[in-house]
Amino acid sequence: MEDWGYKTIVEPFRIKSVEPIPILDATARLRALERAGHNLFKLNSTEVTIDLLTDSGTGAMSAIQWSALMQGDESYAGSTSFRRFESVVRRLTGYPHILPVHQGRAAERILARTILGPGRIVLNNTHFDTTRANIEQVGGVASDLPVPCALEPELEDPFKGNMDLDALDRALATGGERVALVMMTLTNNAVGGQPVSMGNLQAVSERCREAGVPFFLDAARFAENAWFIHTREPGYSDWTLPEIARKMFDLADGFTMSAKKDAIVHIGGILATRRDDWADLFRNELILGEGYLTYGGLAGRDLECMAVGLEESLDPHYLRYRTRSIAYFAEGLQKAGFPIVRPPGGHAVFVDAGRLLSHLAATQFPGVSLANALYLEGGIRSVEVGSLMFPEARLQLLRLAVPRRVYTQSHIDYVLEVAQRVVARKAQIPGYRIVQEPPFLRHFTADLEPLHRPSGWRLEPES
Ligand code: F0G
Image (cartoon, rainbow, N blue to C red; front, top):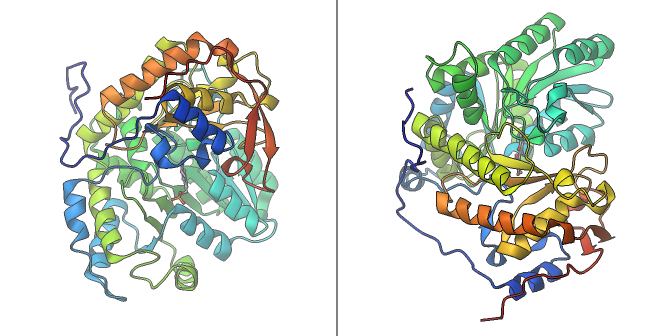
């Protein structure tokens, strides 16, 4: 695929339908943040100008997806929408057993409840938090084996999402029979949306085969991963994206997928395998918790949108724009003085908030401080990935996730302008303390308060 040849990132779509975004003055933002217990999860969407909380379920569907929605066959069993969905997934992945689920974590729950149990080990480059929680819920042990460079934010490496193969060898040897499954999360969200190379996937797949351990993908961002293999890994520049994706899926025995990411739907997911014995177990569990085999936890219309979204996700013009616009955002933040996780990943820019706000200790939640400063300054919502989310976190990061096909370059330019203003008075940004927290997953609902009221905060007169 030859380069576009121009610096400007032309969004490879035009806008057919628009949605106004809320614009609040500084006083209204401060009031909203106080009402939300200084926790951006608890804001109303009407209080957010640019929402970079997540890229999950927040994408803009295409005109073809919206019209496919009207083709939805809502028959309880055997719907044409399921057949269409199944044939697209089969063409893309080659898997014989394809189950629709309402979102990624439903696939993870079925997997955990059918093939795991107390003491059973799952090895992963890095588990996403819902994957880990579902494994631990049934008494399993979720073990992360990222490559060491994934923990060095500034280090440049094309495939920081890879699994540490030496660590895998050791874990397979010591875990023995207790190792129930190896997973690879594509891209590796927790370490910065970093991709996994085909070489690493092949090496992991071979080791699993030798050890007799099943190998699954968490394929939520498989298309962005395929693009990085195409552009960064020697030997793949001549391959089409569907060929690369197919090879990735060929290396595994099954996959879970949240279709709310690369498949650009508002709800949906997939659980698939080539193992007949496991497929039977999955089907029973699907019917118990999600719904009949031909709809999972979804409506027929959702299956139609997923089928179209999966095909659109591998469009090279779209993926070039997608990854280039994330890189543009990352470069702008760096120019503004934000230390970021290098190189930029596929769906988000991760900022090293601990380094930017070096006057704050990890226990003062610098990621929360930076998130709240960006909100107060410009109505931008992001998410802390540090000590509030994971009390043992080694890095204090802030994730700015970019919804797919939603924001234009000028929205991003606005965020960069806000970032510059925040950097200019970073020394005054306060740390936070927790006022109230729930027993688990505290970042969603905890209330916090600033350690001091930021001085010199620019409050515009109310209009
Ligand atoms: N796997 C990965 C790698 C994810 O990033 C997510 C969700 C899931 C599984 C679970 O899928 O939400 O459809 O149940 N990630 C979102 C995020 C929530 O913001 O990164 P789900």
